[in-house]
Image (cartoon, rainbow, N blue to C red; front, side):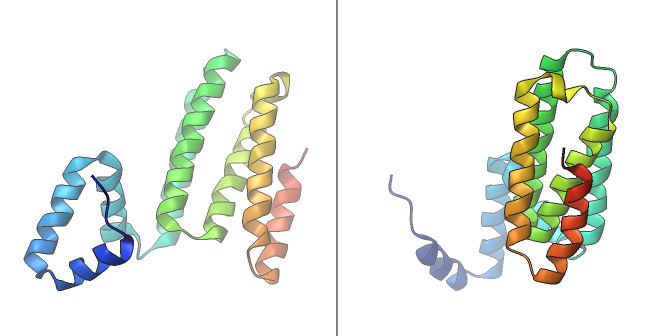
Length: 159
């Protein structure tokens, strides 16, 4: 089955009556958990990104609290990868480079403060360095004034 292009979908959605459009959104939300989460974000949380960022940071804090009891670096790495997938998903929802940079900086800051001996594992060091590269990419696309603010935060988390 060939999927329709985005412009074709947009034209068709514009012509639908609101009730039928709502039914399509509901059936799309039933199809996959990610669709339901994204629709929930758009409906309830997209108007207040600051509160959404705070909520994500609390979730990051909760994940790091769980990691404190973990002594095996292998399971720590798996948990950190899972957390990064969650952060990446939320960054896609927001689609704002400044917020993405802020969340990844927060992750790196929490990793450094957590006491996890991530420098003992080359995989964790590589993961941390990848996050630094990603943060630099996000920061480079921002306005100069905002870049300076995030550059100071980036200095805190650099090796």
